Image (cartoon, rainbow over the protein chains, first blue to last red):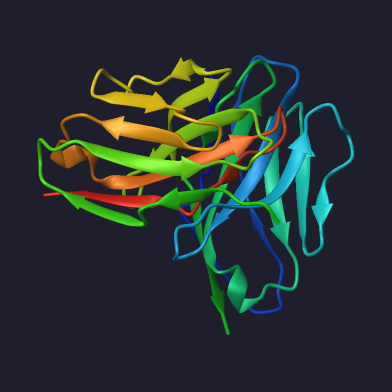
Length: 115
Length: 112
């Protein structure tokens, strides 16, 4: 079974600085998807970024980028120019490619932005 | 932009009562899911639904749970006899295919 591990329960960063959230996963599959979801206090789950395992290029969405290391099974999220609105729980998630594959989530990292 | 909607936003029920949580997935999506999140914990998969049948379910999804797509738009989760430990946030999600899943805003279920 696939597992996702986020080893940082909490992180904090100064506004306008850069922060990196870590995620590792375990799978025997060669093709899969990885995602970062943001959960603000409203508890809505908001997709931040996705990465296809077959793509070597790291995904980027504006201030959000990932460092995908397939051999190391590592998938970190970098947030540049942190803003107060980035404060939230961040969940890393894995999804296989066969059938109606479920998302497997990590435990989450609570990110605090200091003004 | 299309979005997943869920009703109600908050449901309070007494232990032993039946509850139905409702979801309207994005209209052209084919795969539907229910997840739950106990306060302070990670999001856990309950069940996936495709082509009018359950495609996968977790060990949490026991005989007390059922899902239904009664028409072309709604997707429901029924808990037959609620327990205190069913108190959680329940999220519906949908996807078109193997791409990302889009989540609804959640229903907070409180069992007293």
